[in-house]
Length: 265
Image (cartoon, helix red, strand yellow):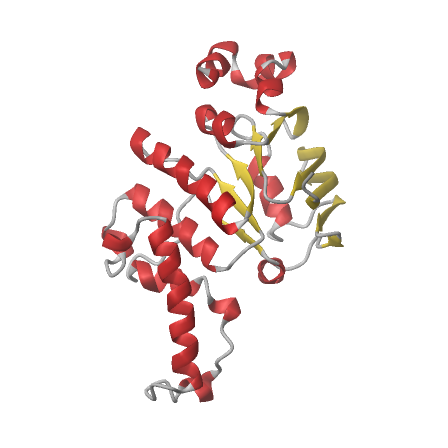
C-alpha cells in the first residue's frame, strides 16, 4: 500500500462570521490522485490556499511527509516540493511558452548575478546550468505536446493551451505534490479528454501525487483514487469514486443523482 505523503488535520478558517473551512481532515497517499469536490463557495480553493501558504488557518495542521508546514510562506512551500496551478491563468502573456516554463525552474537555479555574467562562454557554469534546465523543460513540452507553442507568445495562444502551459510550469518545479485547481475550466470536450490522459501520464511517468479540485464529474470519477466532497466548508463524504456516487448526503447536497449517473456512464 502507498505510504501517506500529505495530511490535513482539523483545518478551520473563518472570514468574519463565515466559517469557510470547518474541521476538514483528509490524507493523500503517495502517487495517487485525490480529488476535492463541492459547489461554488464550498471552501475548496480556500483549502488549497491554506496548503500553499496564501492563508494561515485559524487552527489545524497541514503535514507534508510528516513535517508540519502550516502557515509557512508560499515560496517555502514550493521549496518543500509542492506546486500549484490556479483557477485563473497566471502566466506572462508577453513571454513565450519556453520562457514561462523556464520560470518554473527558478528554485532550482544556482547561478547568481556574477556567475551569470559569464553566460556567453559556452562551458561556463551559467551556460551549463541553462542547458540542464532547458532539457528538463523540453521534456515537459514533449509530455504535454506543446512543441508547436514552444516559441510563441503565450497571450496569442488558445485558452486551453494556456491552461496546459500553466500545468507545465508547475511541473517544471519538479514537485512531489501537485495541486490542480480546476484545470479543465474553459476547455472544450476534446481538450478535457486530452487533459485526463496527461494527468494520468504525470502520475505514472513522473510519480507525482496529485490533489485535484474539479467540477467536471466525468473527469473526477475517471481519474481519482479517492474523493472528498465538501459543502459549506464541511466534509459530507469521502471514499472511492463508486462510494461517492452512492453517498446519499453527497447526492442530496451537491451532485444530484442525474449528474452522478451521467458521470458513471
